Length: 182
Image (cartoon, rainbow, N blue to C red; front, side, top):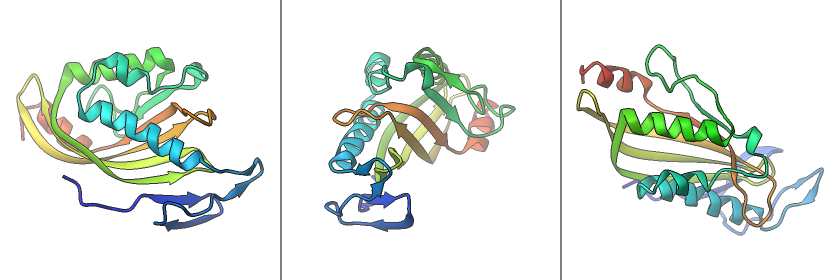
């Protein structure tokens, strides 16, 4: 399990974090932002929980915006030479479906957990650290990994949905596992 870390609230005018969950929201050109932090955190946790519990793909996709469906982007950073899902822009909800289908065809995982949520309520973003044991299915090679998601949400106040899903992970380990060299 991940070590317990405080959730952080960040404003776009400052790079410092507050560990106080009730810290007042920063002001933006749109006025005061109240309650947005909690909604963003709940939405990020919903997505992460759906991964950790290995929910059906339809449940995972329910966490992505239908209001801004065309703007949805899934991007896993890394060299496309290392794995077929790296450095490719999967656009729209159909693109998200293709990304997660490709991932599930190539990889299995277990013991996935998340923690250290950092919420930027002004920009509508949440970053979170995850851990899991991944296995490249065709070779059976496995590795322990720590990865980071950066999630950007739509402007829905009560139930924000993911518009941009970015992943930073150990692409070198994925490459070696795909070759059976781990």
